[in-house]
Image (cartoon, rainbow, N blue to C red; front, side, top):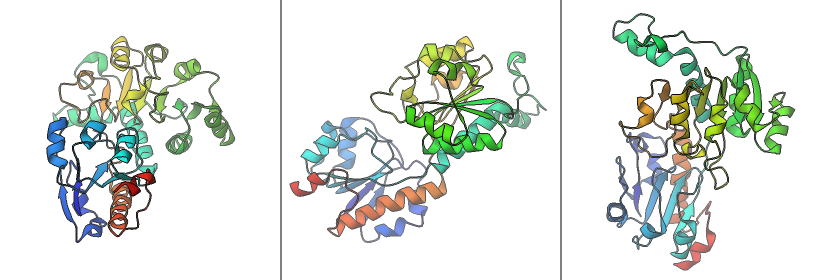
Length: 330
């Protein structure tokens, strides 16, 4: 099969232990992204199968219509709204889903919380410029960091990642308060944490607030400007889930108004994020380039599953197919 691996920014796939699973196939790795429909269609037209790295490339109905050779979309992790499943099914294009782990994104969430709370990045950057114990040359921003012990972590949702983050917080002596569905709140209580009395209380109570919701039509823009306005002026807002969970422009406006005082972000509405992004110009924002799952063990897990699905499909024994009705259309 002719296989395209898309958006492998760091050319990491070829260095994975699982890459030899594709031996015998013709594989092309694309390190750069392209967004235009025409450009994508030209790039992908020759291929029988594509490997998607999470949601880095969206496959719309219009694009799929221009890919007559495409038989299989092998997704690293789960499909999350970036593929037009109905259109793929109608065209006889099978979609194979993979698996994932909450460990890497949970650890990155905690790393961001620690780094932002102790101002690690600006301290380290300024030290290289010869500035000792200087978080900022702006006196207003040159305050000291603070510990997490004794402070309140607010979690919106208590799924696999949220549970891990709550466990880290417990180890650091934090109070953990959870909001979300009734099931989330009850699960948190069963594990010895607290359920917030209301959504409003979650934002008001939290010294650190971290989102761990799935993106869906019901959660898109669920965090509003009024929610953020309730946060303390020294609170930290953390988002390693999906940028679209926050209403458009609400976070930028809230940070400029000083509620919350800081943000740590790994996800953005447009990725890769351009250097002219307004968020990157706000000095109280710590931003990383969507690396929550970009980690060696996670990549081995994600790509092994995606490659094994390709091998099984090529052998005529497709596995983990999201839309099995597509298999009988070719």
